[in-house]
Image (cartoon, rainbow, N blue to C red):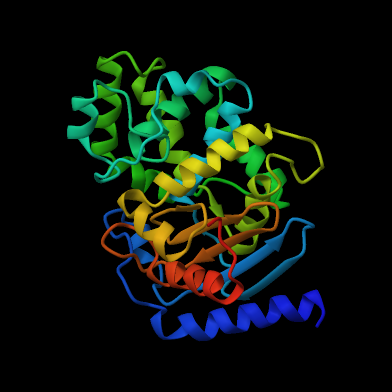
Length: 306
């Protein structure tokens, strides 16, 4: 069997397993623009470290990356320095991704960089490092995805702005503890806009190869070290799916990062980047169909980090 046939057989088996569950869950209607997305959409894309793409479903429809962008702002920051780990911890939260209680109890130091307060700190650091956090992120994602027209969906960004009071509260609380260094309004603007970047499922799979290749970019240059890649993927595994990370490790066994736009990025180190999109979410904010597709993939291939 050729590699092409092998991957196509995997996709066919995954789609057969997940098809009855497409459309289950609820879209993230607390952000009005995300509430308009058809929950019956679904896409699955697999990218090999050699750059081959195999896909099925609605893989060419752009969707909002939301929290998946947190991985790549973190990658940009750690590619320059490890100092960010003085401002954010590396432990699972065990609480909702926008918990104020936990943040105040821990005196403005977020539990990890993949929940909202942690991502705000990382965005603040990237803003200090570059002067344009969202522009730097867009440039990275554009180059890695192969889409020179990748951009922020300004309508969704405005929707985020209008409904972002909890994020404002988190940012001002951290600022009060001295852990936000730029003007809060500026940090929030970059954060809201970064979450509203849109990609297709195929583009997300290509972007994820940055991690699957341990920090090597699409052009062959190294962006960050293997050690940094290991650390980012460790945080993905333990913290990347809100307060369901243990469940994802149990069911799937791969580093994953989800977003409330319905996307999930998973990595098989040194082999694959996997991207799924299913807008229907479970109560913890993770794609119902997407999680089932990744579980089917690991069941079928026996590939996991365990």
